[in-house]
Length: 249
Image (cartoon, rainbow, N blue to C red; front, side, top):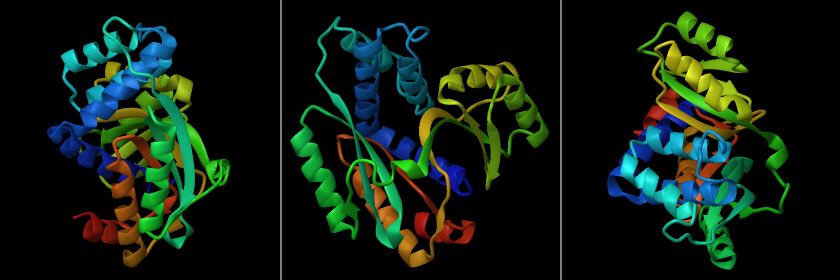
């Protein structure tokens, strides 16, 4: 799990910049609409919707945007027909990559994802090619500069967290996917602010990258995340603090 929370924190900071341009909000709205359409508009009864809404809140998506997406997903104001697809592939240095897509055109998305992998020295694989390397978890990011480790560990453990990882300037609290809401509520009750709360794919093992491979991987991930249909990208790389500072700066 080493390195996962480092990259999760970097992605969150990048996401906030994307949100300023409005592009991220459209992706978050799409996820909310699909969750509401498939499971109903009550977040207390629809775990997927709760998770989608909490993720949107963590990126400071306006409340009215969130409510509008819920209404559209519930059919109160029209709803597009999107489907969820997982693509699996390999990047430079053999890094395993999973791409989560929500699309209204499967053929368009497949062609675009394949083209992005190809342009960045990667290759799209068959279903199941790399999924076995990852496990689904709830992930909560807490600023390590604001809270004592003992306080975070105690609150998270009491709330039912599976693991707490300190990596760089952040704690990552890992939960069972079904326990994400309860653990976040426990941290909130303990007065611990959560910078990010979402479902994620955590690699069982990671590959350490040098600067050259790190640059190539980040370019590939940036290109994937820039696609309108892509919701999330997961990979099993690790980058040292020194290299990360250079390539992500």
